[in-house]
Image 1 (cartoon, rainbow, N blue to C red):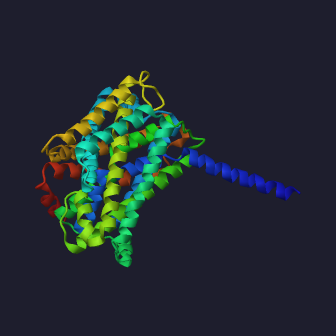
Image 2: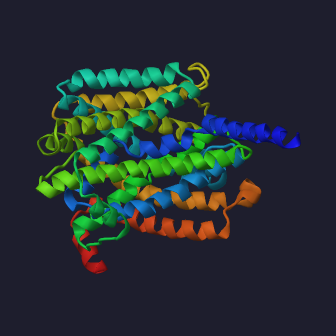
Image 3: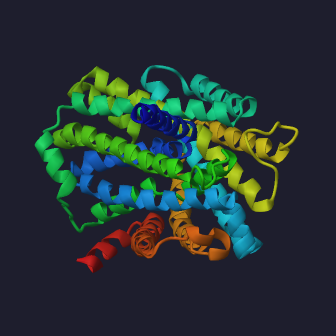
Length: 430
C-alpha cells in the first residue's frame, strides 16, 4: 500500500515544479529576445548577406557568454533584492553612477529612435505610411506601460517573443544547403580583413548590450524572485539566451542562402525584406518584414522601460510597473519622454539618423566593459552576495569572455569613430 501512495506525491511535486517554473518564466527570455531588436536584426542580416555562413560559428561562444553574464545579473537581483544601478551607486558612488547613466541614456535614446525607424520601415513595406504607423505604435506602447501592471506587461512581452519563430519559417523557405549550414556552425571560418573584423565586433556588441543586465536584474527584483526560487530563474536565463541566438542563427541563414548567394547588396533590414521576394518568394519577404515589425515594436517598449528603471534606481526614485502614475511620477514621465523623442525623430522629413546611431554605438562600446567589470566585482563581493559569489571556474570563464568582449567593444568604438582605423587593426592582427 505504501508504494502507490508515493507515486502521486512525486507527480504532485513534478507538476508543482513545472507550474512554479512557468510562474517565474519571463525576465530571462524577454531580456535576451529584445537583443534581437531592429538594430540586431539588421546586424545579423548584414552578417549573412555579406559573409554567407561565415559567422554562424561565432553564435555558439556568444550564447555561452550571454548565459554567464545574464546569470550573474539575475543572481545578484535574487540575492540582494536590488537592481544593478542601485548596487553600482551604493558601491562605487554617485559620480561613477552618473557617468554610466548618462552614457546609457544617450545610447538607449538612439536605440529607441532606431526601433521606431524599424517600425516605419516594416509598415512601409506593406504600404502603410510612417505618419500613421509610428504615432499609433507610440500610443500603443505608452498605453501598455502606463495602464498595465508588471504581470500584464510581461505576458504581452512573452507573446511577442513567440513571433520570432517567423524567422525559422523564412529560413526554410530560403532553401539553404543544410549540411553546409551545420558545418559552418561548428567549424570557424576566420578571415582577417577590416570588414570581417568590423562585423565580428558588431555581432558581439549586438548580442551582449549594457542595458540588458540592468533590465534583467530590475525585472528579477520587481517580480520578487529570491534564492528559494532562483533555480527556476536560472533556467529562464539559459533558455532565453539559447532561443535568442537560435533566432539570430536563422536570420543569418536566410540572408546567406539568398542574398549572399545572389550577390545582392543590402544596407538595412528593410532592404533584406524587399530583396527576398524575387529570390525566396513573397511569403519569405512578408515573414521577414513581420519579424522586423514585431522586434522593433517589442524593443520600443523594453528599451525605454529599461532606461527608466535604471535611472530611477540609480538616484533612488520610485519606480515599477506595479506603481500608479501618482506614486512614481518621474518613472512614467521619463518613459513618456523617451517614447516621444523616439517617435518624433523618425517623423522629421529627410532626417539622417546615421550619425546619431554611430555615436550611440561608440558610447555603447565604451560602456559595456565598464558595466561588465563592475558586475564581476559586485557578484564576487561577499558582503553583498554571501555564499552566492561566483565559483572559481565561473570567474575564470567570465573574465575570459569579458576580456574578449572588452577588446571587441573598445575596437567597435574605435572603428566606429574612425573607420579608417579598421584597416590598420586588421593589418596589425595579421
